[in-house]
Length: 420
Image (cartoon, rainbow, N blue to C red; front, side, top):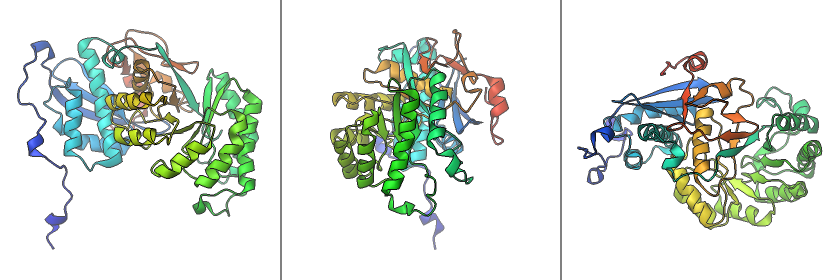
C-alpha cells in the first residue's frame, strides 16, 4: 500500500488565489512585518490558550484561543503562513489561513481566532487607538456581563457521587445569592445536570419524565425566591433534550420570566431549533458551537434563535463577530457572546460589545479563579477589568491591556514557556 497516498496534507493550497503579498507600498511607519507567533497555556478554570504576535517593531499583539492546548498546537502549525506578512492586513491574512486550512475544523477556527485577536491588538497599538475605534467607534463605554454560575457547585460533583446533595434547590439559591452579592445583575445556571436518583434514567433518550422536569423547575423557583425578579436569569440546557422535552420544560419555566433558555436542542438540527424557538415565549439563545457567519445567517433567517451567542475565542475573531452582529441586527436579534476565557478574551469581547448596536451582554466564567482580575494590567489606566458585573472598555492602544508576566509564569501549564 502506498502510505503517501493516504497521508492527510497539512494544507490545501490554491495557487490561483494566492493571497500572499510580495511587496508593500505602505509608508515606512506602516511597513511592519510579523517576525514570530508564540503561544503559551495558562491554567485557569480552563486551559487558556494565549497567543502573542511579534513584529520587527517594539510592538506585539496578544490574543486568546479557546481549547487551550489543542488550539495553541494548531496555532504553532499554521502561524508560519503569517510570518513575514504585514499585521495590518487582518482580513487578508485570515482569508489566507482559511484558504490553506479549509478542513481545519472547530479547533482550527479557534486557533485562527487567537491569531486574529492578537492582530487587532497589534493594529491598535501601531495606530495608537483602542480596538473599538478600529471596529467603527463606540456605542457604550462599559459592557455588562452575565455570570455563568454552573450548578452552584463543582462541575465534577455528579462524577464524585454528590449529585443528591449538590444539585438541590438550596445549593442553587445559595450560589445565586453569592453572585448577586458580588454585584452581578445577570446570571445563568446549568439546568441539564443530573437530578437526585437519576442514575438509572435512560439518558440517551434525551427525554425527561415529569419527576425530572418538576425537579428542574424547583431549582429555578428556589433561585427566583432568593434573588427576586429584578435580576436577569438564564438557564443552559447544553443541547441535551428532544424537541418535546425542551418545549415541555420551557413552558413550565415561563412563569419565572427568564432572560433566555440556552441550547435546548442541538443548533445543528435546524428544524428542531425552529420548533422550540417558535413554541416558547422565553427567548432561545444559541451559537457557542457555530463558528461561521453563514451558519448564523441561516439560523437567524430561519427564526431558529432569539439571541445569538457566538464564542469570542473560536468563531473566527473580531471581524467575523462584527459580521455576525450585522446579520443579527438586520433581523432585530441581540448578541450575547459565549465566553469561558481569561481576561484577554473578555476584553476582546468588550471592544466588540462597545462597537455594535445590538450588544446584550458577555458571559463571565471566572468567579472560581481568585487571580482572574489580576492576570492582565490596563495600559495607562488603573482598576480591575471586571467590577460589579461590568467591564469598562479599556481606552489604551489596542486591547488596552498587557499580561502580568509574574502571574502568567506562576500559573502556566507544565508544558508551556513564558512568552512575556
